[in-house]
Image 1 (cartoon, helix red, strand yellow):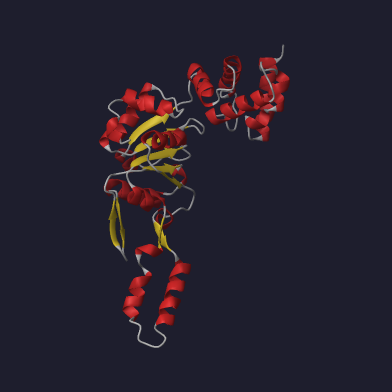
Image 2: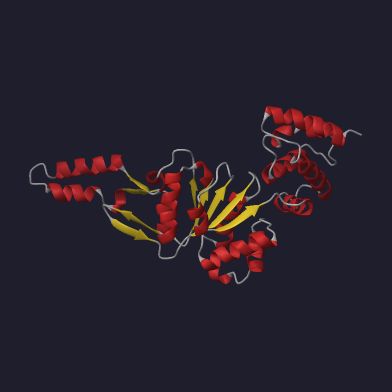
Length: 295
């Protein structure tokens, strides 16, 4: 389906809900506006609050391809745009040399043929422009540096890139762009101004229970509520990495697979590996669970 069929924020929430992604009114509204205004959507928030999952759900609900650019320290424009398939270019050159062994090979034509589009390796940003309409997810943009931010700003302003050997590639329809940030550093104002912005909080208890029941329907209502209640308290326990919704789901599923009907201290301790990922956090969580779950 196209983005134009989403006539309101309620439509956005309903279509996202059909994929299992439950969002509140504020997130549904800013997502609707980003689609209508063809503006990138910048999502910030703690890890595990559903930023990446929103882009995935959007692609699924709109029946569009999802193109993901995972940012990391040191990423540059070439790793986001394109590269040339050097091994295939060498094979092509050798084929030309073999074919022209008994005749004349035009050097300029041979060089020109090396930069044909068939040898172009499209990286995520270029691929999204070529495939558009598509959803382009720029994940964890806060890990990249200032220079890469400037590159993104240029692309998101024009939705086109220039390839010296081929010319300009422009998206016929601007892709739906979702940028996520865990706020390990502040992004520049210029990039923020280009985007619509939303800070995603951890869901409240009732919504998180609903998420667990939607994404893991095999988990009983009672167990889901117990698990979410504990997780919501642990998020304020000073952990190095507080559990996100993904960890809540993993923990609920792990407890279900062990046949746990009601959360108790023994079952919780046995399944901590689904909930916390740091040794120091595990020690804190054991102490907290001892207070919360001991009869």
